Image (cartoon, rainbow, N blue to C red; front, side, top):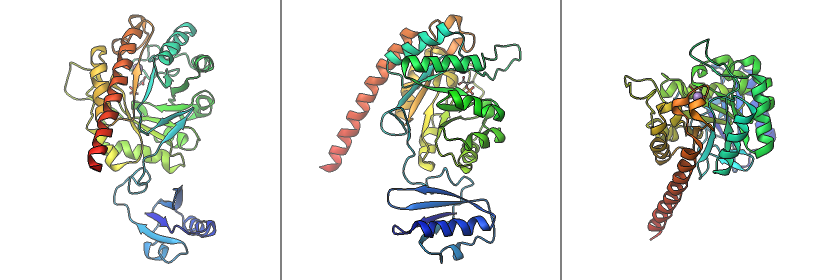
Length: 346
Ligand code: PEP
Ligand code: MN
């Protein structure tokens, strides 16, 4: 259920309402809008009845939400969620580019690529320090040393850091270094991890599981939000299908579909979504065309020497060209939007 408060509801009304709900074993999630406050009721309790809530002071409407996900739905929050980070707005008008290597390998590698990401217009630096690998014999990441190198790259370039967290017990450690905590595809349904990142005050980048349905993806985001953290960036990174010419199939349908039913921003990762360097540029532009709020791109100073995901990693030249095309595409898109709004005025 979602409770919409009256525009003139007092903080006392909100306090009493929350107290009533909490004392009946359910929890609340308060979202303060510009005009009015909206309160999500989390956890089912038959004693918290809609009819009764309607009689409490300051309550305007009580909307039952039919979907299994509630806080992440547009029924709960009409306006897009925008996440602000170091002058970058994720989920607003302009797409955000997150770029960097699959894994942090050395100081030289991460410093070199951080400068290239920055100089060519990237907004955030990505790089794994803890890597979830299919084989236990593959490189597992540099661990805390990798986090320290990411911090150094941030100090040198000013780029904020996106890095993956694999286990709930490491949340305090990773949160000390990262600006955005990434939950990878393999952990999308690691509910303890989702709850742990739900309790911190840093944005979470949640990647879609490789066989997750849209509802499951949003339910995972609901886990994070139900713990209090609403700074969630969804990421479509491709799903497993019968195709064998690409690592995954980038499901771009999900971008406008999620925009319709959720207020959360969603970005696209064409690197993992295709597994192929030659497909990254067209699928990046396609992602932006269907309304993605940003892209996550793997780039390395020497992809042929990359310790992981070499085949889907751009070299600096290809990254530069991609960023150039993206900037043209964005200009074209804003020109088109402007034309459209002008013709509506006529
Ligand atoms: C990654 O971004 O490096 C990664 C491991 O991605 P995914 O979880 O989508 O496979
Ligand atoms: Mn990777």
